[in-house]
Image (cartoon, rainbow, N blue to C red; front, side, top):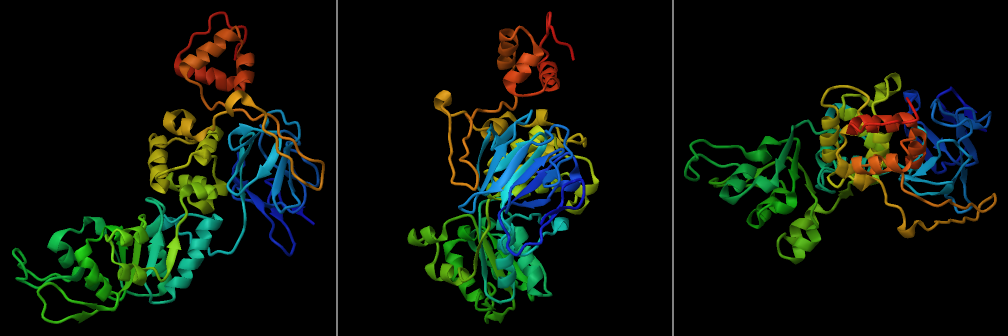
Length: 458
């Protein structure tokens, strides 16, 4: 039996299994952020949903707003309960439907993400910029933790900006090695200087070598050497690296090889197997590195981590979120969750720093680049045809209403056209854009549109 432990809607669930869940990723009452809601029986959500419901302290949520319930196939379904402000599924208004992992639900100013628990390890380290609690992130941490206990090389695979260096540092920390962590970008290594940079050189080994250098491998003695962008390592250096993985290096100009004790963690966003076929990467080196591959999910597959990271980029530690004020306007938070982030956390950080330029909170929606808004909000289906879903459930079959695009912010021309067509009736324009009147007035002020003879006043 579920019990509601406080007014923010945290739940305890003494059951033996772990069903699919939704996680609250943003809401006006920040104490409820990151609360996970298991869906193993129907659950009502709203401001006053009754003893079997989850209370949300959100003034834009109806008293009984939404029902979440499990389907017969182990999936999770939702149904709007006639709410005033509606329910939005991945940016489109819907009466109900099925939730897949990573789907976003919006109720008023509250945002939920469909998730699962799954196995994993908590490796979050905000002081190092390593932030995440999503299943894919925790699963990668679990594999990294296992790999750290062996001396074998680790190969991190993932898109640019997906956190490969942070994961490499986690492997180093978990390994118990007392030496330093040294990071090297292989894309910067060129010509004969690359060999000297990695393996060191003796004095007089080449023109300009007035002193001897230890090289990155010896600098990392007893620790971890992180080789980022390993796919860009020059082909003529790769045999030396293969030998170094066997703990033996020969500095440029040295007469004898040296033994080193270094753990190698390599990373790439390239398809190394394809480069082997193209003869751009040695097959034996790939086989040696690929003994323990760890794939890092892109940010778009870690929806639960997007706002968590964004708060971190504003200087808010995850542990302090329940005691603070909202960091985002609700419209902004929704767009951040729906945008696909092709450049991952690096792109998110750049956007958040731009939004936080004046240091004020909550972060404003109006400063968000238009390209992100347009890419995040899905277009309506061609012709506006109804989209119907039926599921075999424990209750009656569920029908989904016509999906339509929820306008995040119209252009000036679109707003002027709407005002003219509705006779400058702000309430009518608000209904057309599915927003409240205050938001329409904010848009009018933003675009400096005069309101001659407007029948409504704020």
